Structures are given as C-alpha cells and as structure tokens.
Length: 158
Image (cartoon, rainbow, N blue to C red; front, side):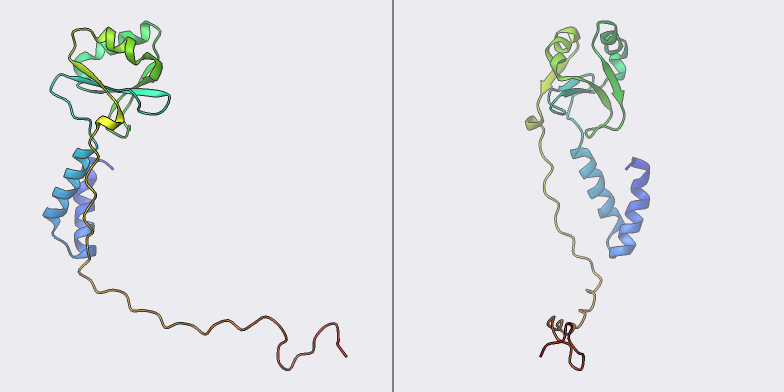
C-alpha cells in the first residue's frame, strides 16, 4: 500500500463501517509509522538480521549514495529495494555486516537487530456500527447412511 492509497482506503472503510474518516486516517498513518526503522537525520541503520541470510541498510541513504555504491566495487553485493518491510533500503549478505559497519567510518550509523525494533501495539478491535447479519436457521441433520425406505438392497438379502 502506498501513501497515495490512504485517502481512498479511509473513505472506503468510513462508509463501509460507518466510522469517522479523520480517525481512520490518523490510525493508518500511526500504523505505517510503526513499520519504519527509527533513525536520526543523516543517520544510517544496519538491520543485521533482516532475514536469516541477509541484512539491510536503512535511513538517509540518499546522502551517502556514493559510499553505498562504492561497496559494490569492493566485492560486496548490495542492491536497493524500495519494497522492504521497513521501507526502502539496501539489501546485502548478513556476513558483510561488520565490514560495512567499518567502511561507513565517520558516517553516523548503528547496527541493530529485529529485537531492537519496537513492535507496534496490538490494534484495538473496531466494532462496526451496522447490525449483525441475521442468523440462518439450522438445517435438518443429515440422515444416517443405510437402507432407504421403499428401496431394495443390493445384493438381495433373504
């Protein structure tokens, strides 16, 4: 979902569940903020365990683009991905975390693990204002499998 989809989603949910559109927009934006890696301006953040075999670099990467691209020249395969779980970032092998940390040198950076990222609070249950759907009357229980009245059995029994 993109930021541009939020107004459309908000209006849909507001009409579907008869909720306040402004509250929905605030809740969606608050949720999206929880999915971002917290960092200071100009800081880079290395998530050392993005997956079991890869790490990711987040933060103000545009300011340090030449430095990041120079890592490829040094034999480190690093690729940009705009669709990572925590926002756009650069993905590389987890075995290069320490060497990238050293190569960043004077650039403000920190190395964190997934456990260091605060988990978003559990969402509150939203009860729609519409009435619940009427319950369907229970159907007759299925008949037992066996002889059907008025029908002969096969093979015939004596």
